Amino acid sequence: MASSPVRAPDLEEIQVDVEMEGAQSEAAGAANDAEKEDDVVEFEPPARVTFIDLLKSPIVEIAVGSGNEVTILTAHQALLVRSPLFAEACEQFNESDAHRRIELASEPLDAVGCFLQYLYTGEYFPKKLDESRGLESDPSIPAVDESGEQLLKHARVYTLADKLGLAELKTLAHSKIHRINSTARGEIAYARFVYASTPREDTTIRKPVAAFWAHRSHVLRHEAEDEFRKMCLEFPQFGFDVLSLVLDAKEKGQNREHPGEKSSRKRQRTSQV
Image (cartoon, rainbow, N blue to C red; front, side, top):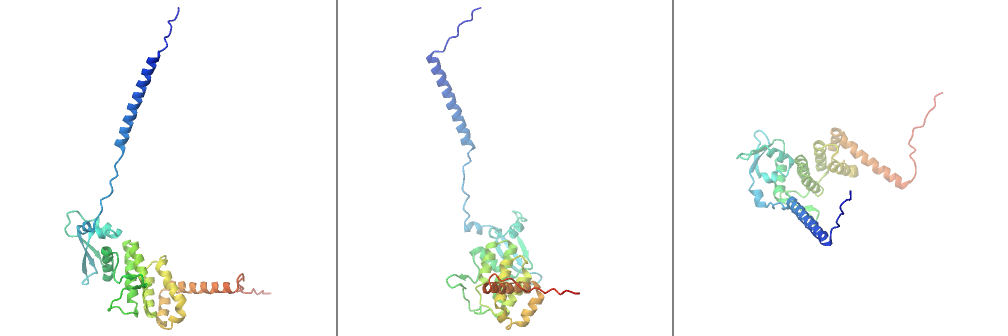
């Protein structure tokens, strides 16, 4: 049986088909573009928090001390939460709480005051004077720290900042320590606080203390010999750190004088026959 012939499409039909396919493709592309536009999330920059906004936040009482020696300080919650410790404490408050209180029973009042001043101003008294590598003067503060109280002030701020998780305040307090002119007894009081109040791995504050005495102990210990001896007995790690630095310096000096020379400090073996 003869098959019917297949008619080839003419040029007009082909053109129509091409135009229809093109129109369909354009429609599909437009639909995809519309879906992409729907998926795009417009970026909105975060609203700028002004200082006025911070002052509008709730007031929090800070009870410093214990027993009959409690002092009540206040600060705005939006500033306090910069500290992870205070942020965790403030999470316990409800929105409806009119009275908010946090207790710092074992922290020194002056250090807490310096912390609050830093929150509001970015500094605390006495401020650094960059041009002279000193600190701003005050008639109530002696030029030479005889007792170590000025050193201890910034050391206490340092340890408090560590507890509060404020690295920038730690750095600021530590930088002020090295701008104080003190005496041997003042340095011993400071060293005792550092070794009693900081962990062994905190070399940021401990190493400069040991280095100070390693380099100057042969002179300064005569000014405070009893205190230096007590310090070494009370904190053996202090004595070890100082001695290690002294021996390291001596070894480096010998290596410079006799490069390549090996140590001959070995005990001779004695044979027993």
